[in-house]
Amino acid sequence: MGHPYAPAELQLPGYVPLQLSQSQILAPYLGTSLLLVLAIWLVSGRCRGLSKIDRLLMCWWAFTGLTHIVIEGTFVFAPGFFRKENPNYFDELWKEYSKGDSRYVARDTATLTVEAITAVLEGPASLLAVYAIASHKSYSHILQFTVCLGQLYGCLVYFITAYLDGFNFWGPRLCTSYSSLQLCSFKCHNLKGKGNSNQASLKVLLVFCTAIVIPKEQRAVQ
Image (tube, one colour):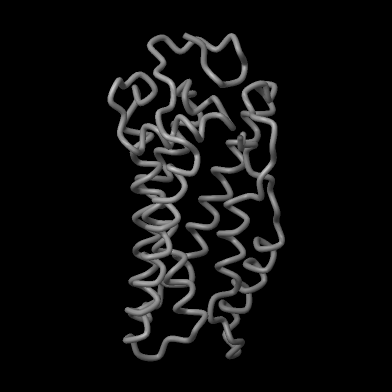
């Protein structure tokens, strides 16, 4: 049976076509994400000494952390998702996502490695950032900065390997980089220039990182 991925000659033995439409995949994801963000926003309002920026960052890190763990984690630990006769929601999500980059459905080793690091390390670290912000931990800033750098490193690996492989597995459309959004969301979190040279140096690095814009993988939107 044929498949909708590029290149057309990609071999996917046992491929089972999508059973959910794009809207059926997006609606639960967007609805759950909005509920999560709303919940974190309300809970963060009970934490003392948090600015609106702090609360927004908590919402973002909770969202991105759970996305890494739940969404990307299911990809990492479900190698045969495209062959399942009775697929679950996440199997369908990754079959749809792979229309934009067939390295996912083909289980490309570089892509799988990047996603595994993201799900296993960066996901939990993002949730730790939520706790660190809420608790005013001293390591909050450097933790967020480190996760941002990890995301940037993953994007570099992603695009460099894509270039070396010839870009023959991408769908027809471009999207804005998720990683650039994550870097911008961090944006000098709560560094208010109190004369601390370490904070000043960190602020310069953060501004540099938030200026970076990287095109995300092309995804087919039918």
